[in-house]
Image (tube, rainbow, N blue to C red):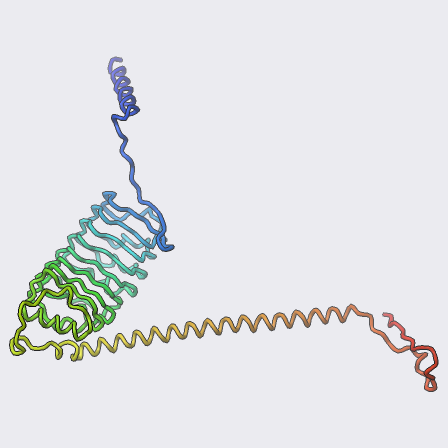
Length: 343
């Protein structure tokens, strides 16, 4: 009995403290829903999640899972969310990604896997048909192995960020005809080869700041970018100009190489294909509109013809009276008579 009264007294005290504001009830945080540029966005930011939640709307297009405690991505993680276009997974604890995890995301355009513990890049990302922007910076890619990568890749990459990954050289992803910006800053790049830039014929911006490029490498990159018409703003400043015998001009290994020419051919083919697809789409649209107009005109004419036919059937036909069929009828005679036809 005494224990019962003590428990009751404790509960009453807790309620009084809570009502007085000394005890603040912890707020249960949940994923929030919203829209951005007419896209369904679900924000699960900083919720201490340990895995990808499976109770979200399957039609999500922008999914923010950043600042959580996710350690592993499984093949079942995104199977329900095939409409995702933008996926944020930065600042987690991701150490491994099962093969096939990103395969269902055929609509994915951008993914951010930065600030995790990855030791390699999931190769299936490079086969996604719409992936344009890839952020994989601040991971441990010291022993990056891309020998199993299928080339040329399907992903139309335009932006690639591999900054701060302890890379000794630029990753060889094959021909990247649409890549215009590459961030490889804060990497040692001690094994950098100027040939690796021949795969990027559309390159406009490259960030190599805080890298350990050799003096010759710095000079070759600067010359290459100037020949492309790009700015060497984010290339380490070359302290002194080396003689051409010590540091040969890079053009035979870059813009005059077969790889660069192949890259340009691929880019031109892609642009021509896009132009013809656009033209075909416009032509198809015009034809569709013309077909609708022709159908409407024919339909209106048929309606009018049917209306005239119905009106003609409602009229009572007139016939000439037999009394008028006299050959010797004179003009001063009585006027013509008409008999109404009777059915």
